[in-house]
Length: 292
Image (tube, rainbow, N blue to C red; front, side, top):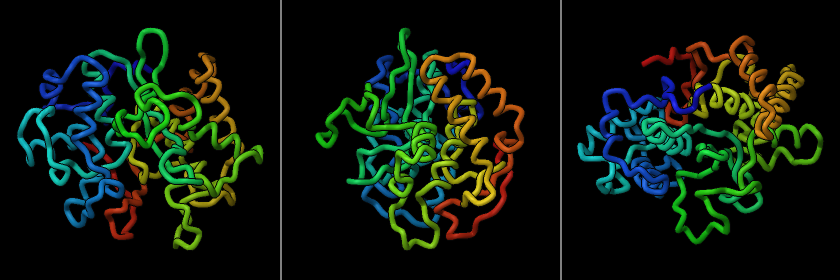
């Protein structure tokens, strides 16, 4: 697909003009978009009710709707943390990707796991990539490059700190990785184990969807996704994981095959309806038609 073109999720809609005033340099754009969103768990502020429900905004246009109602100023104007839109890594990334696409720069989101947040654990995470004319540059647009916690450049990430879901899945399937060290929460006593093989498999499907223009939330579920590996089509997941890893290594035929599978396989394709397990729902999970 053409990563310089907005998707239905990244399209800023009526707010496109706000991106015209953004800086033209990548670090400047990242600095602006980074300060528009506050993470619902990691931002140091506890949000509830309607504020927590902002995590389900999904569309860049909707995120900017909320920002402009609350702040009504150019995007580069400072926002107090409490006045930012409540979201997560996916929203940070999609805003950044949207801004780059607006300026004609090919950009995409990548779904996987970051090993640089929790000691001994790899948290589910979404980062961005943009084409600099020669190569895809991976950037964690949520993180400040000046943050002393990071021993690598978050604006041009090396291989290792972040691993795609496909890479992790293949390592898990080969017995090389402990699946319980990958997920959203390492707690083994939680009502739903948010780590392990089923979780990694789900993220392979998110990775495929994001690469094909469906940059959904990390609690939108459809097709053959499952909260267990019992009866799941793990061989099918093996196939798409291998294709995506090959595509990352420059195999254009593999990239085309993965895209074709996403468009034609009913177990993979998002068709507009999702079973939503939002942290803002209070456990009231259910099917929703996702349209704007």
